[in-house]
Image 1 (cartoon, rainbow, N blue to C red):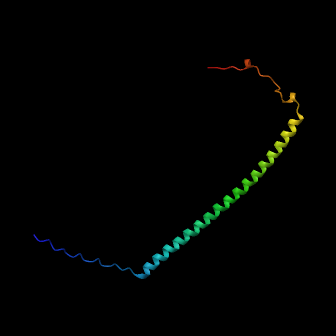
Image 2: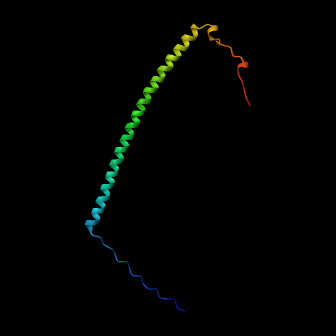
Image 3: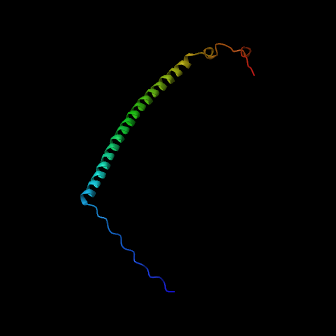
Length: 103
C-alpha cells in the first residue's frame, strides 16, 4: 500500500495589535518598574541609615566599656595592693551543718 499523502497544515494567521496600545502597555510597565526601583532605593537608604546609627551607638558603647574596663582594672590593681592577707580571707566561716538536703 502506498504511503498516505501528507495534508498541508495552514500557516497561522498573524495577529496584529495596534501600535498605540502596545506602546501604552510598554510605557505603563516601564513606569511601574521605575516606581518600584525608586521605592527600593528609598527603603535601602532608610535601612542603611538605621544601620549606620546602630554602628555609631555600638561604637559609643564599646568606648564606654573600654573605659569601664580601665577603671575596674585600676581599682583592682590599687585595691589588692592596699589589702592585707586578712582582708582577703572570708569574713564568715560556713558550717555544713547549716545546710539541709532532701531527697
